[in-house]
Length: 313
Image 1 (cartoon, one colour):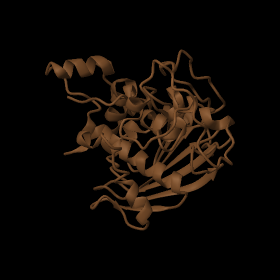
Image 2 (cartoon, helix red, strand yellow):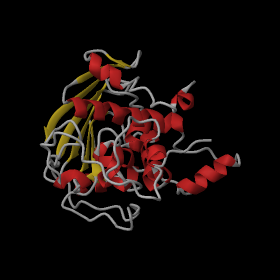
Image 3 (cartoon, rainbow, N blue to C red):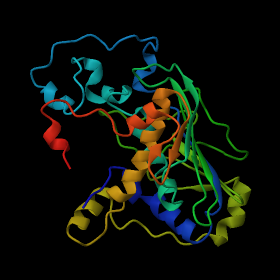
Image 4 (spheres, rainbow, N blue to C red):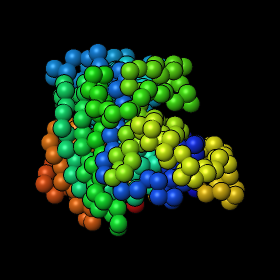
């Protein structure tokens, strides 16, 4: 029994998206805009970095070798530890890897997106070889799937790197159920984390995690009101869902067969982000076909000495 930690997959958005998709309210989606424009930990750093930060004494309470696990050796520095690991290509996945699964999870599952054919870094502000850019716009092109048209998903992060909003967008709401990080709540901003879904007939806006979708503009929402299907309530939160699945009473809603391909999308995005060039991906062979160095990212570096035994199949 497996369950990925995108807890919104057991909240209202999951059941609403599923019901609206099955009822034909969400159909013929051609484009999705995903945005996370809050300040990130590395935004105050100097992108003209030439080397990793200097070694510092390892805290007595930290087993640094174990913390690094199979990764190549890095001298300890406080900017690698706690949540700071998210900042570095060698350890984390930036804003896309941190927030993508909380914004695009239902889009990815219920539109059966799978893996993209092209990943294009449209804009990378403050790009360097060590930590993530100050702002990123990344485009993912997904092909036609069955009777569903091709979809372009465009990701925006960076405080001032805001996407264009459709007419009638209205107010940007912040999901009140976003978990605290290190005891702090996320601060509301002009455009809070979320998504805009464009279909041939309708446009939807939504937030992150469990936030439900709204049809925009408001006049269109009122027109569609009587056509919307009932949406069941979640029978269990994400943690209960996992425990009940272990007892055979439910199935997990974000098992690795659902969460794994979603994470692979973000891994491809980070590869394009790090290399700062377009990647072409073969969905059948699962290889990058236009960039040998990028394709090597899919395998990664071998595990560090004494960690090999844990990576044998």
